[in-house]
Length: 185
Image (cartoon, rainbow, N blue to C red; front, side):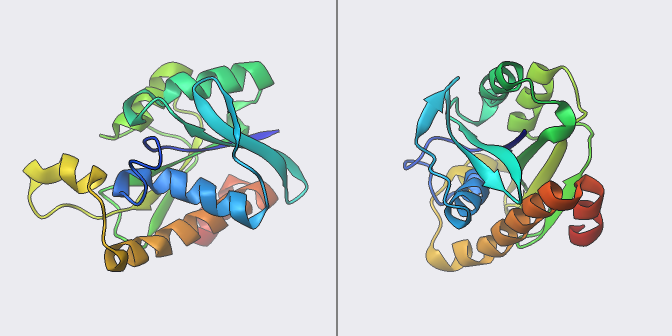
């Protein structure tokens, strides 16, 4: 079994914001594979189904970004999912808009959602896909930049990264993290 987690803040209030790239990727995968995200457990909205012949749980934590790990850890424990079968997706200001970066493991950087996941799992040994949102012009505007509503034109540019991240998740399930990294980094 695999757990694919998109980080974000509760919808619909935070829909179409840069900070919800993880949720947007989960929504795209769920739509493509007709997985209903209607169940709730462990402070998360989730659905499960088969993707590329693998049993997968798609999860959107509802704890708000900075406490995401508090939803993820109980899923891992309850379903006994090994860390190598976990993929966490989140936004990253250090990655260009429309691009993604995939890592097999590593530190959380400055992303508070990733910090929460690392803290709760007591490990950095899980795969992640970082979806590029670019940097704000004014560093002091970072919070408004990540949670502010976007116009359609800006969001269309972000959708390129959402599509790449979705494709990378499927590659991860089909052929593993190394293949996803080689193909999409």
